[in-house]
Image (cartoon, protein in one colour):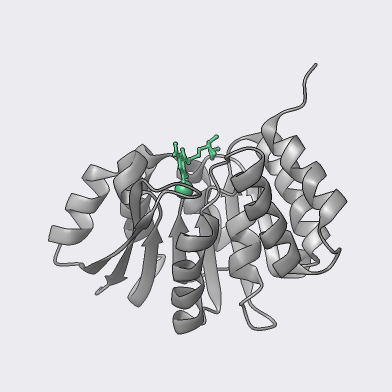
Length: 214
Ligand SMILES: O=C(NC/C=C/[C@H]1OC[C@H](O)[C@@H]1O)c1cc([N+](=O)[O-])cc(O)c1O
Ligand SMILES: [Mg+2]
């Protein structure tokens, strides 16, 4: 049977990127998605905004919802100081299998813990599985209708603290209207929109950065 797009993306990384070099893995994926096949990575333009927020927060504990092929996982982990952990949750086992290989190829496997499963099931287990008290940084990039229920779950499980930063992809395209309405109107958050474009296109999209006020 025909290979899948994630498998073709992985093959491009194994063929063209330098093993152990996260930046070359990132550049190879961006080149593949611009010149061969579009894929739903956060991409280079929004990725630069993601980089600047990760550097500003310099998190000790970080959570990513929606690994896909591991592009943003590698982008985030390459900026984390030694001894910090990025936990990334992926529901789709085929995506997870590709992401594991891309993460390993980048050489960042010691900073990343990829867990397969539904975010709604795994978030309440973060304390027991990883001894996590609170997350300094959360990147939301999974199913768009799960953003709102999952941050409410993070609140209920007391996994956010004063100053925790949420960064959400695709708040315009495909769009997360209920999430946006919540973080922009709830007294629990201070929210800011970073205008950009849908990865590898001219379509408007953006990232929403929200500080939990506790
Ligand atoms: O659905 C998107 N992401 C959620 C991914 C959902 C799938 O991967 C994680 C989950 O296991 C599910 O199988 C998405 C879609 C577009 N898009 O343009 O359609 C652009 C993006 O940046 C996106 O993150
Ligand atoms: Mg996205």
